[in-house]
Amino acid sequence: MTADNTPEDRHTVRLKRLKYQSWHRGTKEMDLIFGHFANQEIENLSEEELQQFEALLNVLDTTAYNWICGVEETPAEFQTPLFERICSFKQLNGTVLRDDL
Image (cartoon, rainbow, N blue to C red; front, side, top):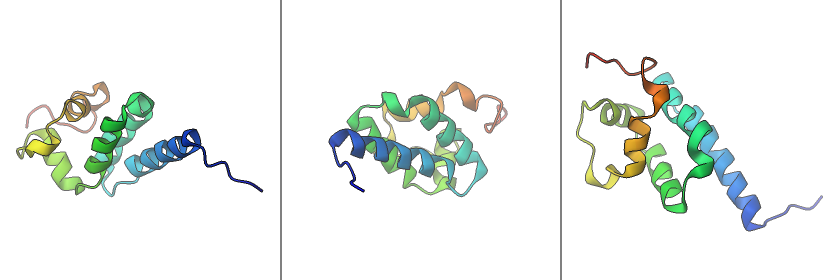
């Protein structure tokens, strides 16, 4: 058995890993937020956005959730157009984010 180790194969493995990590966070809320976003958007992310997404996946769930909900201020290094896309992602409305916060 031979394993292809082309850049395309590494990219595919990376995307699969990120999707898995997005759905297996530790809290159901963050599974839903990052998981749905990854399923719909990850193939369209640039290299820079993939790096930003990987960095977000390394943030504690409670911290990331508080940033997304606006409970805590998001640090400057995470205030990116990608983070704004995640915060405004249409799947979030009425599912895991409360409108009355």
